[in-house]
Image 1 (spheres, helix red, strand yellow):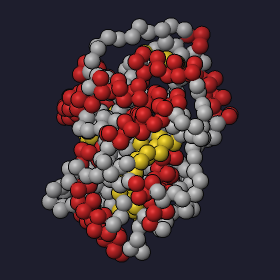
Image 2 (cartoon, rainbow, N blue to C red):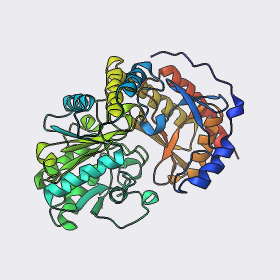
Image 3 (cartoon, rainbow, N blue to C red):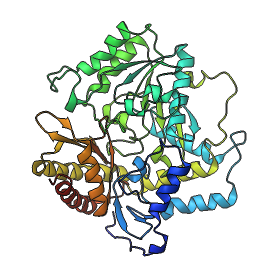
Image 4 (cartoon, rainbow, N blue to C red):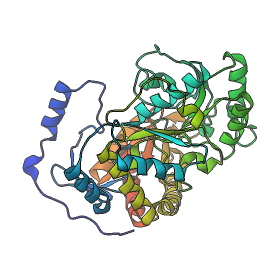
Length: 444
């Protein structure tokens, strides 16, 4: 990919971040948080770069939470959106939408043949709600099996499908959720070591089915790589073992691909394909339209037919979002960004392992493609989480021109998920910044 850098802008008269922070606190829900000790407004983007109100340039290694999949202000994506804006913005799903139909056909081509029907929504949360709806209706059960540390959305049902206490504002739920130990090898729930553990985490799924459920759960839901959980990446055989268990009991598998879809893992179009399994429902959103809001599910004919009442989605699959998604998928394919994610992602992990040799606060480096997590600890022997170092590191990296995210149950994991167009040169620049930022974050 191109190594060129965008020219920084200079309009300091618009740099009113402090006033925006004040207004944000006055008018928005207090649960809507902001990154950084001094939050910034991102005013403009160009490819892998973004610019704040003062014109300062940053290398974007967070991509709007794995959402800007192809880069900022890509003409091949934006031009079709602009043209569609001038033709038709909205009609509702009560009318034929050509781009919606074409996108559904495109998604069917990218997924296993049994995933024959597509339903579009506006977000990943709403898409997970749709997946939970069709499986609970189909199985006549409100029981769900979910992974600890998982995250599936912020709605009434999905917060309780999420095994993350910081994101659970209520234990009330229309679902009865049974949580299983997740494949978090760095912090194994059974304090075992892979591969001598014999995949206790996968075997726990059957134990839970047999002991704490009615025997008829509606579904098992999991992210191939846990996003908010801190990019926890299961061993290669984990989902194969789990799927064998689910098939014995006839339980559908929902693969939440909101963050791992559309080539980000560098292995395939979706995360589940990297594990050689076929889910019964896939949930998608975020990176599909490169930042334009869209979500949806692809499901089997049987599950899709479970909704027997009237149903529609006013904005789901609208002409703007589906036009953007088609343009984005074309850009990803034309520019071979999945392969770029694989190659550049391997370089990124290699360079991060080099950093780990110099910085003892790096406890673990994990992920696939351009979905990589760096877990920070106070001490490698005890693995005590270091969320305060993560906060300092993010601030120090921002000052030096690099944006990254964080996650994990203890907020101690640096999440790296840049646009798929980044180069090895961008990685090397980011590593230099992270190196200096780690020194600053750990200084006495």
